[in-house]
Image (cartoon, rainbow, N blue to C red):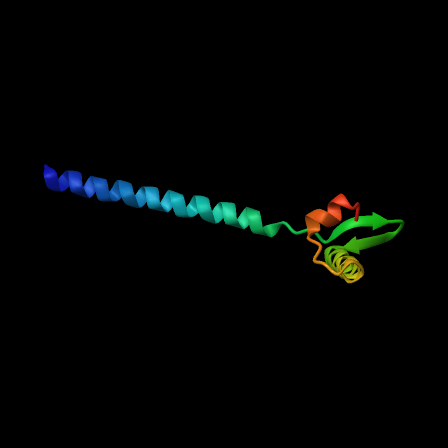
Length: 81
């Protein structure tokens, strides 16, 4: 009787592990497939994520050079950049 219960319990654990793996794999597959290519469209021109990030960093460095102090993104946001 105890041996049968132990086998049933192992089977139940493996079923749970399989469901967990399938669930996490499905979540990961859905989560990582989406990608954004552009953040805005100006007229006919799309602004890519890389171009936006590069320009934001350039503006950040320019303000840091003017003020002589480090400017975090939160502070740039409050300044309206």
